[in-house]
Image (cartoon, rainbow, N blue to C red; front, side, top):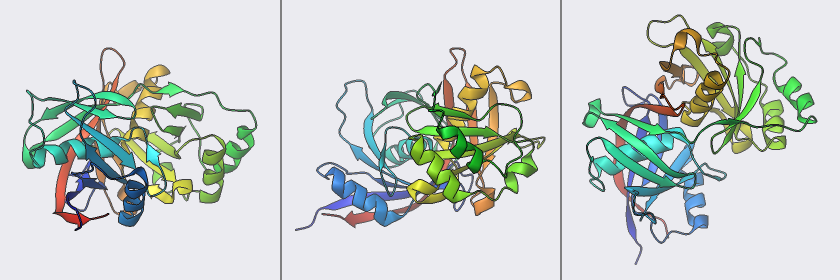
Length: 293
């Protein structure tokens, strides 16, 4: 007899359904092997699918494993925010005065919950982003991957907060929005530098957001990720490290996903200790059951 497991699909960093970044959440992930989880993540064809599991740490509210269609990640932003939403919606955990703790491969991450249901904003503290030195041989691949970009501001930098991200500042919002990414070159760069993708960003004069972001993960079979928490956290960490936050300040909104029809907004906060928090709203789109044995 097949095991039936609860499943939820959500749109994360989304004010309405159909926006933001889609996430699959298997609420009963216990007794699934790594191979079964990976196969299901490939089946959903979402940028990430998560599996909720019993905790192994007394401090944790819940434990999660995070998979792209190709591989497992130690941390990712929209899966962390979306899974917190899902476990609250399903009643697996209770909002403990606005605080939860997520256990994942990157460690124990604090989660803040503000509001309820459709008006709920959830923030996760990302693992501290750090600048990663890369082999000089990668420079040629970086030059090829960015040769059609209007570079400006900060030097292209490889950051890591679990996954590794190339963070590339461009000259204007238009330069980000109108970019036609060189996907084969980006794939070659990320594979050579053991990173998950390349993100581009620029400042914006919009009254609704202060940064515009796009993220590309062609080596992971995701040409463009709609809205990417870990990349946004890496960008914030880089700007903070380089004292380059400028007019964005320590609390700002990033716009991402418009170019792929998934307009989303990431709320970014940098606390007094320099830790980066990313958050936003999540919409429940599908509630059901699955058999995957």
